[in-house]
Amino acid sequence: MSDATEHDFPTPVLEDPETEAGYMHHYVPIPAEVAAALDADGVTHVEGTLDAGSGTRPFRRALHRQPDGSLRLKFGAGWLREAGAAVGNVARVTLHEDPDPGRVDMPGELSAALDLDPEASKAWAALSPSRRKTHAYHVGRAKRTDTRIRRALSILDEIKRSD
Image 1: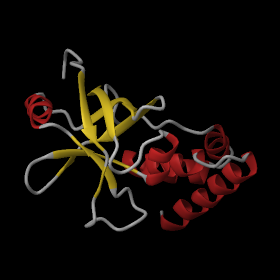
Image 2 (image 1 turned 90 degrees about the vertical axis):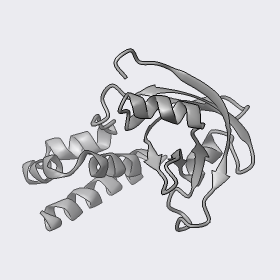
Image 3 (image 1 turned 30 degrees about the horizontal axis):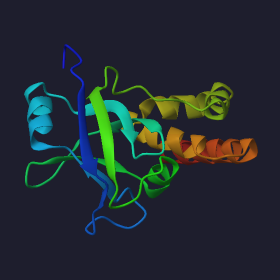
């Protein structure tokens, strides 16, 4: 979307019984007219906000196309809980194209660990953006600093072994 068109719409928070429990099986459907506009502009990743009535929470997500051609945004149960949303709620979503879909928001602990380990840094650079995002999210979700450090070190060990 070259003009960064913003879309704003109400949508229900739903649960997909076909998706394995615990793996982002909650979603919000994208209305057909918004999906058509996003498709016309070739958009695959969006950023925006979700407001379920208890405050607005920002997000960055890939659009997920379903076999019937519809689009949805997937969210984890924990993320939705923190946003004050639950299955059956109607949320207001505002979104636009993510101008930098490959960007990884790095927790400080993960950045520091990578800075200290050239071998892990090389393995990190070889990962796909989606894999880096998954790892960074896992580290950043921890509430305690020592947990973030432990997770970062564990991930670096893992990616060095699989390189």
